[in-house]
Length: 125
View 1 (cartoon, rainbow, N blue to C red):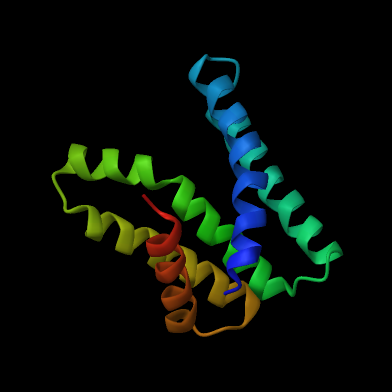
View 2 (cartoon, one colour):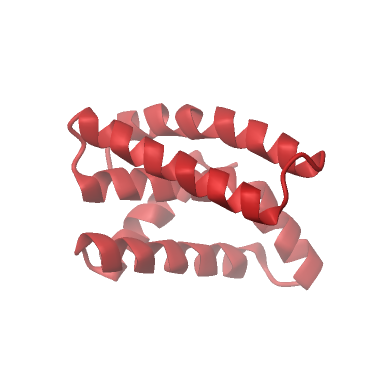
C-alpha cells in the first residue's frame, strides 16, 4: 500500500468524521443519521479517489485502513470495557474490514488483512 495514499486519505476522513462525531455526541444526530452520514462520507472518498486514478481495491484498502486507524481510540475503549486484550479487538476489526474488501473487490481476504494490519501498525498510535 502506498504510504502517500494513506497520508491523503487520513485527513480527508478525519476532519469530516470528527465533525460528525461532535454532532452525534451533542445529540444533533441520532444513530441512524450518524450511520448514513458516515457511509456517505466513505462513498464520497471512494469516488474522489477513483476520479484521481486510484484503482477501486486500493481505494477500498486505504479507506478501510484509515477507518481502522481513526477507530483506534474506540477499539481501546472497547478492549477496556470488555476486558479483552486490545489485539483481539483490533484483530476482529481487521478481519471484518478484510472480509468486506475481499468480498467486494476480488482480492484474497488474507492479503487484505495483511495490508490492513500493516496500515494499522504504521499509522495507529
